[in-house]
Length: 440
Image 1 (tube, rainbow, N blue to C red):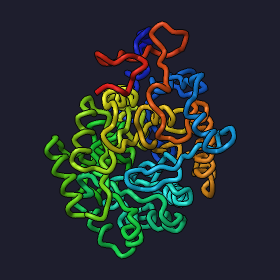
Image 2: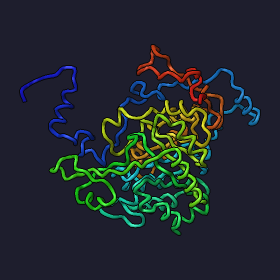
Image 3: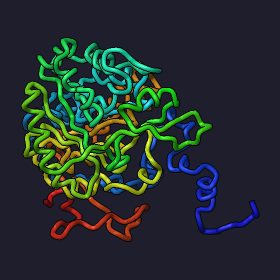
Image 4: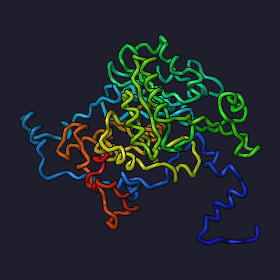
């Protein structure tokens, strides 16, 4: 090295690419399975993060609904009078939250996935099992170095779930379809309790927030990658000496008509299962969500660009996809059950999502961190703290159910305000800053 310097230029990153080549496109391989990745923005407590975090929750002075509640109760209402029970994609839930998909990455596929399943069942909230679990880890019996097979997570959930509450949603991607995952689950006597109680759903995964337009990615030891090479694209991007390879799944190909036909296929072939559809934060998210609802989807999940993952290219984490706030602005008033994910971990962010039309918010990275902290009760305690914050916030607005929130309950700082962080994106024509979420 000659000592050449390039002040004001990302010299360190360029030199790393010159040394390591394609491996620098991704986070450090040593971090795989031990670190969860997402958009690099500060969260609450460290200055305002993304646009959704910057919105203020604004209670009114006059509260007619509080008066209605006072009359109904015969006393002054309190925050513990807020009812957080709801219906999420056809499932009764104790809270407006659900356990998001972890997929087949190492962080979410082992003991942490089982612990999260048990605690989600105990809480009575729905759980989503992510893509590629069966092709990578097996359905009934684990394969390779494996993590538990899919059925182990379903059993862990069922063993703890109260009767009639929650539900299990099974994602399917292109490779899952080749393995006939939905057929396996639907016809298995072991899942009959879910079917008979109306607590089984299938989710068509079209994308995810951390890497819009790409399929799932995991790091594997070379021998394990070779075992899966007939089902996935396995690539040498970390160097021949690393001992690791990148396993890439197909993102699938979708048009409006393909989505319509796929939802109809799901309803026809699996009539006792609910139908969910998950989208990445694409620029046409409003059209995509409406297409799924009109075709008969019971729920549409929108994963904002803040969504986390076990593995993704660095440039996708920070530069690709719409922020969740913009997705909700474009969707406007939902035509059906709308679920949101992306950096959800505390009550105010969940309340903002609910105010912008969501029915519930998904806990992904937060859930994994919580069960890593305490495999027996970490997620339960996280959910309890989130529920308390949510009740306090909804009560402060003079409302007493989660579905009573509206965009009027939020205020968005204008450009040049004293709040740190970049100014909020302009609202579409005809939609004022105080009317976000009400437009088309």
